[in-house]
Length: 458
Image 1 (cartoon, one colour):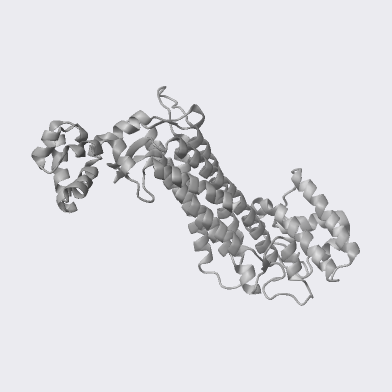
Image 2 (spheres, rainbow, N blue to C red):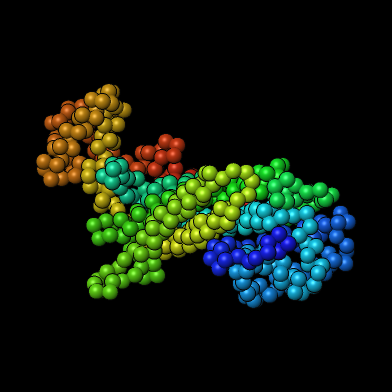
């Protein structure tokens, strides 16, 4: 490739450290698509003869068929996917293959190929997020009125509905989707034509190449175009936060499936056993989703550290930008698919959830609210009265709504008989009708709004 400048070949270790084909071979589709667009543009502008352009295009189509059939033969001496394509093209069509690299560099070539890959990765990720969101909506609709404990500090706080709880994760996914969509829009500028770093003196048509590859426009600055990896950081940032959301849901599934909780039963399809304990049903799929989030966060950090000291424009450090992206994309795709399948198949146990919701005196706030609303008691005073009621229930070894009216009136005479019905967990969740609240009517509305939003996005 640069034999005119160098008299000797690289050392064996240099050849090994310099070769990236084992990693960037995943970009072969993008490289071939970009090369075909580049060759077509060179022909349209008269830089390349129509005969050579036709031969190049036919050769690239043939290479695509070979690679699709798994016939890419890796040669470290050819370093990367770009030189593998060019070398194979030369074998197929002869010297005309050498004209393909006119008015481009591997610097703008790799930036362009990588953008195409990341753009497709975002599209795939959005589809997987949509599938998980649909699973959440479906299960939330089934359990819009199923009562469960709502926690703060992992202590029982107030009763909520399972549908409301699941819709909280749906809200996270909406934000995740928006981050990926924003990243896609921001990155959709074509680097081709920037050449090594300064552009080219050939009369190329960068707009034509950008259109052919589905970009909105050519990149504005050649130095920035070949050194920019913000689009990879954007993907990894969005992926890391999505993975954190999946990890939080996975942790809840792990807790809920444990015997002390018993809120869900994991199907065989999403469980494993123990090599020694025949009784075990382990939530390994959820644990792996939780574990994968750590690697995805690590991939983001790895790329940020890689970029932090690089001057303009291109440096070979950027060869290491692909492993973090490939790793994170693969893990996130797998995690989203696993979580979608798990969520669709989980068997919820409403009676265990309802019993847990009733424990912990979770309707104490409802008693305080009743005193404020019906007896005109200042909330802080009502809070203390409800606290004394909780202490009385604990002293009796009973739940709050098991206290009699006489016992409650002994605590404060302003508590009337009408307070008793509000102390059930069903009444508690039904009363939370404020916008965004847990009342079943609000959950159904939220699901309908989410489905309408999904339809309008398509």
